Length: 185
Image: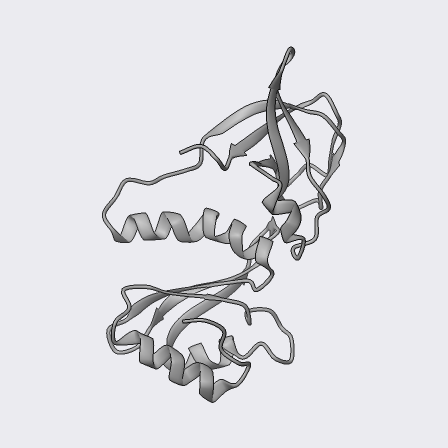
């Protein structure tokens, strides 16, 4: 549909207009706690939507539920571009496949040697942008850029995500890590 202003009436009208033709509604943005995050308020009037903080980075704020007279499924993603992309990979793609009656799909995961130290917030599963390669020593992965959810250029340079588990706050160069290959199907 495109960008909708942070105005409750405009958002309500846009979503209601789409419900007559939608099998699934996906929104991006407005699910945090900012002054202009009107999505929660509007969706609470249209159906039953649950908003949670997921223990992952990027992509902590998420929402899901049903809205409208036909109980159309809705998934609400964070507004920062990297958070939205990671959330799409982790939550939306599996949901779409399920709704289509297709088997579950997960990106191929491989083990690779980390080329540089990597830090991660304790208690959250981190999906760090990275470049995957194979050298003489085998598969390797190099972190790209910083942790910021707004750093879309770093995502564009990436072809993989290093998965750092919730209980790990530091991974040293040379350690084996799990890697989601983004350019593989």
